[in-house]
Amino acid sequence: MDYTFDFTSVWEYREYLVNGVLGTIRLTAAGTLFGIGVGILGAVARAWNMPGLRQIYAGYVELIRNTPFIVQLFFVFFGLPAIGVQLTEWEAATLAMVINLGAYSTEIIRAGIEAIPKGQIEAALALAMSRYQIFCHVVLRQALIKIWPALSSQIVIVMLGSAVCSQISAEELTFGANFIQSRNFRAFEVYFICTGLYLLMALSLRQLLASFGRRVLVRRAP
Amino acid sequence: MNRRTVLSAMILGLTALASGFVHADALDDVLKNKTLRVAVPQDFPPFGSVGVDLKPVGYDIDMAKLIANQLGVVVEIVPVTSANRIPYLSTKKVDLVISSLGKNAEREKVIDFSDAYAPFFNGVFGLSSQKVGKVEDLAGKTVGVTRGAIEDLELTKIAPAGVTIKRFEDNNTTISAFLAGQVPLVATGNIVAASIAEKQPNKKPEVKFLIKNSPCHIGVNKNETRLLERVNFIIAQAKKDGSLNRIADKWLKAPLPADL
Image (cartoon, rainbow over all chains, first blue to last red; front, top):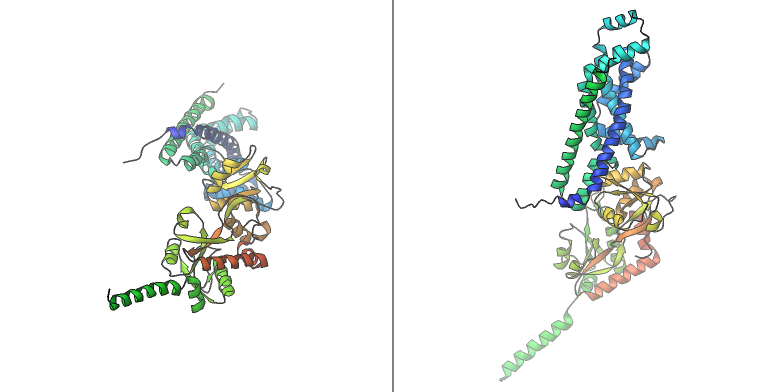
């Protein structure tokens, strides 16, 4: 093997990697926050048979879960301008991630809601809890605790999927790595470091989500 | 020295002298045979490709026909590839090479180049509503470019402060971004711009300024000065009377640049 490794040539472009990591974190944070919001609304609409909303969500979930993310992203960025909706690459990337996570988390959270025994809700009604209190404390909290491992896996998948957003020139980590590689042609070194950074981010995210699940969801009982 | 030696020496001398006078160059051969053999590409539109009737068509083919017309001879089109176009010329299988040939020092050692007959450049293009005349006007604007391409490297070097350069993964994505209006300006080659103009005539990219210029020249064998001069004369005529502009408009959807 006569390839000499040269990691220093990647060090001089480190600002692209740093900006890339920040970009990925921004996209993941915005995508997760709004995506889970969309998912909770969808799960409730489907589990509690809200008229109108249920059918819309059913169609939306089937469409998004059965098409590739990159196609959805290209449709938002390249296709929407044809009907007059022009989004910047960050807006388009965030929107595509929210739509994508929203569909998957709808189904995940719906499974959690449907797993709660009816008796719990009846007991809560008997204790004169308002509908809002029942939803927050009895239904949603227990559902989230049940499906938290599955949901945090989906969040990490979405974070790794943000790499695709480099295709529309959103300057996140994969874009940074591709850029550096196109300048110094050190593909092995660049992508080795890029993989390491994604690994670091994914493991940290999992830890963060797991500790959120333990401390906030489970333990915050008054 | 006896008579025989002197006689043979005289005959040898005369033959040598005569061969010097009787030497026919390529231009004479072309005019005598009434045929101009030209090497053209068939895999590089719009310079040379194959039409629906399997006949070669393109900018270079039209150029070959123009030159043959001006010489008053018939043109014989010889399709070649990028690898064998210069060997075909050196081995005299063709008289001219009209194949989007760029001039560089290595090739200059082997063949001669005529004046430029077709533009071939990288530049910044955009819709006519964008008022950009030179690289400094880019400040505050957004330019799309294919990552790692020659336009990316050159533009990054010369771009002023305040320019947003959006890099896309490949040529097609860059073109899609331009056509979707996501980037009002795009740095690419004039061939790519021509293909955009062909597919979407209402979103024609106009050239704003050049980044790197490498116009196409016609290849002629070394030591064929008469043929070279004649070809240069025909090119100059065609530029003056507008026939070259017609070819450029037809294949590149843009007129010839003024400094060709």
